[in-house]
Image (tube, rainbow, N blue to C red; front, top):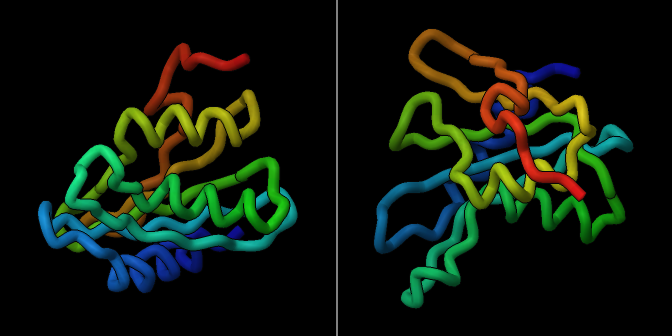
Length: 127
């Protein structure tokens, strides 16, 4: 899988983020087990708890298309190099990735950074 393609899609969709309160735009792109790619951006709500992160939006889009497993995720924010998923997103990623984990792709001024999801979320809760 070409991780740069995933990152390019995350960068592109970050431009559609709706973040009038935090001004923190994020885009994400997940690869489904089928090989198809699904993108999502964050969108905020005046009732802050209803805000949806880019990662959960992308995963929800994949689920709506019939995917049940993700194999990789790229996350990008123009506001923060090496943008990593929040705790809620880590739990959702956990529920839709293989037990051995997936690769999480971020980007900083030096290029792509690839981490194992298990590194970001060790000893995760799974049913």
